[in-house]
Amino acid sequence: MARSKSSQRWLQEHHADDYVRKSKQQALRSRAVYKLEEIDERDRLIRPDSCVVELGAAPGGWTEYVAARLGRNGFLLAVDILPMEPVEGATILQGDFTELEVLDQVKCAIGGRSVDLVLSDMAPNFTGQSAVDQPRSVYLAELALEMCDEVLSDSGVLLVKTFQGVGFEMLLAQMRKSFSSVKTRKPSASRSRSREVYILAKR
Ligand SMILES: C[S@@+](CC[C@H](N)C(=O)[O-])C[C@H]1O[C@@H](n2cnc3c(N)ncnc32)[C@H](O)[C@@H]1O
Image (cartoon, rainbow, N blue to C red; front, side, top):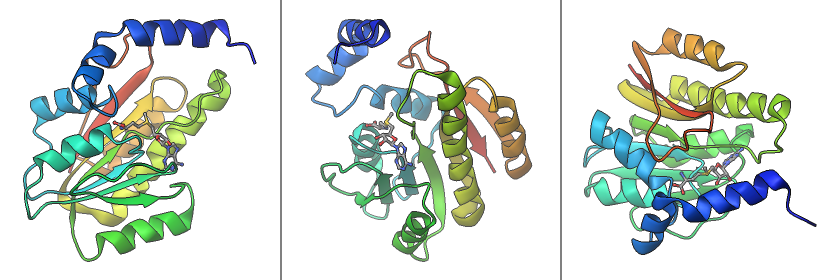
């Protein structure tokens, strides 16, 4: 099947992208890692003993970044619907996070730990139709938020990817009910013409 103009443009931009080049040079699994790195450097999200749950982890750029920052007492659970290569220091769970039984598996894998940080970089498969893509993205962010109500500690932090558009303001309002501080972050590795934005929420 021929590529659409928008996917050709995306590929051209992707290959010309400095972050793509840098991630290849550094043998990183994805350019997405630079987004987390920038936010972490600014907001100090990860401590050596943090208990971290990461949603939407494949191919594992963020997972490698977090695992490298954790010490012996840290814990990292990485979840994705897609399979991913193992990362030393991370427990990997493959499953569709929209399914309740996967949430149960996450809770089971966490055991009795209290979670310090929930990261979600989940994004649906984009169709290019904003009426379809936008609600799906917001829904994934809502699921991450709902999980926080069950597993996040009283001083925990949520960093979740979403997209500006319909439902975004409502999501922010929902977050403000559960968190005392809710801010947005647009790291420089996030393409400026993308509506992608991260919400950083602290108890
Ligand atoms: C932008 S990628 C994540 C990139 C990752 N942070 C990295 O650094 O390599 C988004 C991921 O969300 C995952 N995802 C989308 N919907 C999901 C779902 N329902 N359950 C679990 N993972 C999902 C996709 O499979 C994809 O791997």
